[in-house]
Each structure stands twice: as C-alpha cells, then as structure tokens.
Amino acid sequence: MDKALRYLALGRKSGSVVLGEDRCCEAAGEGRMKLLLLPADVGEHTERRAGRALEGRRALLRRLPWKREELSALLGGGCAMVGFTDAGLAAVFAQSMMESDSDWEETASLLQYRRDRALRRKAAPRKHKNGERGG
Image 1 (cartoon, helix red, strand yellow):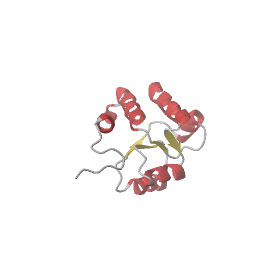
Image 2: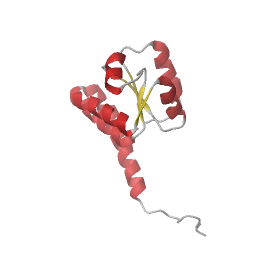
Image 3: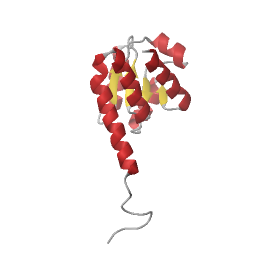
Image 4: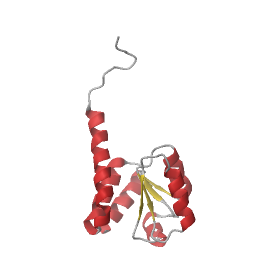
C-alpha cells in the first residue's frame, strides 16, 4: 500500500489528483473524474454527495483504507474526497491497491481496460483532417 500512497502523492504533484469535496464534484461534473476515492472515516453526507456528483458519469467510486488525517498529512489539505482525473495514473493506483487487497481487482481491470481503449483511440488514424469532410 505504500506504493499506492506514492501514486497519490505523484498525482498530487502532477495535477492529476484533485483534493476536496468542491473540486472533486466540479471535476466530476465536467466529466474529467476517472476514480473518486473516499477516506475510511468519511461521513454518510459526504458519501451521498460523491454519489450524486457521479450520477450519470463513468467514474468509479471507492473507499480507501486510510483515514482523512493520514491522507491530509501525505497530500496536504483537506481530504474528504480525492479523485484521479488521469486514466493511466488511476489504473496503476488501482493495480497497486489490488496487490494488497483483492477487492480492488474489478476496479483495477475496468480502469486498465478504459485506459487501453483510450490509448488505442488516440493512436488510430483520423478519418478527416481538420476542416475536411468526406462526401
């Protein structure tokens, strides 16, 4: 799990991890959220708010084994919600969580599938160049 914490810290530094309820809900509303994480000791109100923010979205919601204080000490700032906006980093984070907790297997495989699909889509040749349309 130390590896997973390192991925969270790396994401925080790179800007791929969003902290706090407001910022996470905003990212979810914009469709940028890939994986939304809740600390172990978060209340029901925050859990309901996270669920509402993700309604109709493809982002996943998971609980973490760490408490808010531990996450705040690592990431700096209030950590009632933590979210990944980068699919690749979310996938490797979930994979590292799966190494110590088998409950993360489905989440890790789904995020890996979505990441691979996005990479294939990016690598595929474009049908039309900018401004051109087929006839």
